[in-house]
Length: 125
Image (cartoon, rainbow, N blue to C red; front, side, top):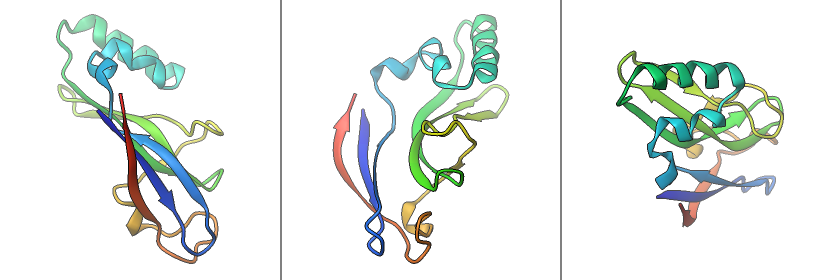
């Protein structure tokens, strides 16, 4: 089950609601390939076709988009066999993002004045 997180800046009042984690449907590699850009989707589909039981870890994770100056939730996947990781793009602008381990460790991408804060607002599946 996934978690809905509100990330916000106390300085400029910017706020983002993000879905993190994964749901029941994300347990099969075939169900998550379409969440990535087309070139990554092809790689993952080929991998799934070659492996009867592909071992992977998938979750939506928080990320910062430097292009739109926003906090977003993106798909992130790690293939255990090859130790290869894939990260989706910004859902708003389609540009590359940087994953965030903890919002409280980065400054607001809009005002850059204070560190972000976050709290759980719900669950999703």
